[in-house]
Image (cartoon, rainbow, N blue to C red; front, side, top):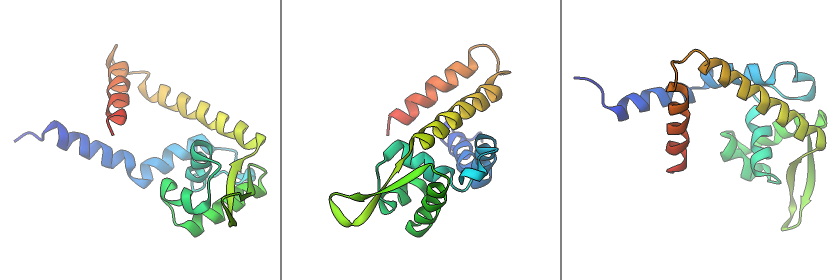
Length: 145
């Protein structure tokens, strides 16, 4: 019996979300940025700050898929590299918010460019129309939350 479309999609999604698959992609996106604290490990933290910041480490942790202490430690590395700044949370004086610096914004722009280039490379030899159909369908799938 052939697997259903749902089963096939679930298997492909599991592979995509597998840590090794993501780390391989993150490695190409973060190449040469280690001196700034950007590594495959810290990628989800800086990316999360870019998408959701200013944000506390506690708020960022579940979005980045790490523990709060790990989010704080990775944010500290990124702050040492001049990419992230901590500011007092006006709603809770005991907490700080993480935001990107101007240099952090530049690094995010570079990584997004690299990610787009990597995905373009991976889709470049697909048959005519298939890559566009895939991206259209993927966007629709993501939008249906």
